[in-house]
Image (cartoon, rainbow, N blue to C red):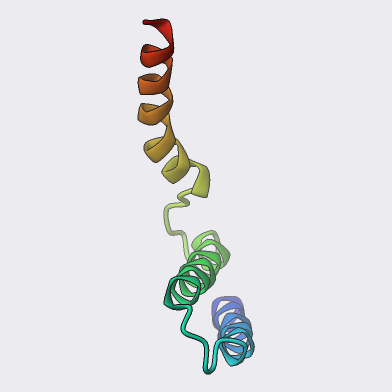
Length: 77
């Protein structure tokens, strides 16, 4: 019951948000909005449905940590 309520709330938020993109040529922002809604929905149902919780910061660390190490290496030269 809780999971379906969370999903329903996110569907309503998605529909409201997509109305603002009607007629826009901004596909990148549309995809980013879709990703954020999907991620938010997953994080909302992860605990009640006993799914693994994947914090967003793990993805950020995965992308920016190697770049940071490379920049440090360049600056030490």
